[in-house]
Image: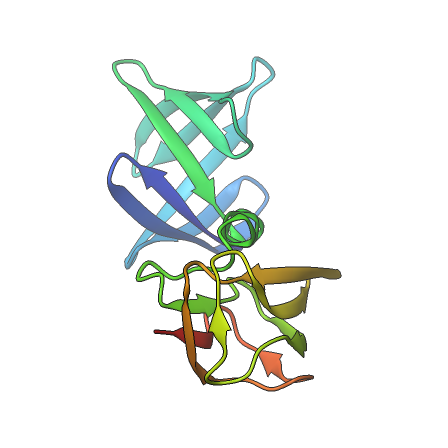
Length: 169
């Protein structure tokens, strides 16, 4: 299982490398940790790592996958960014990359239908491509007014996560 954890301005890549009961080997970015993790009856998490014990209480926030983590001395607001939340976030944004000139799908899937051709003029909010992912069809919309400069996929094509599908000038 792989997720990203956003804590303030830092986003850490967290992977469970192996698990045997409560004993986990996790990788945070490029560093490996061997931990003993217990979810206690009072709702806190007890973590033992390298002989040190940590107790953390996670309280759900206002939005799914947002939490406030309470430790003995500190409080942290954090967000879990997994494949599902990336998909829902990008679906709401029309599948945008940060430059707003491209459209991509945050998850692997299949192109159902391309609604535009290279050279077409589009307005912000126009549907440009329909993608099937996670057993759902999603319409990806133009993030801005512009001209379709390049279509990198075709109908029926299987796509990778974050693959640029359409470019807009």
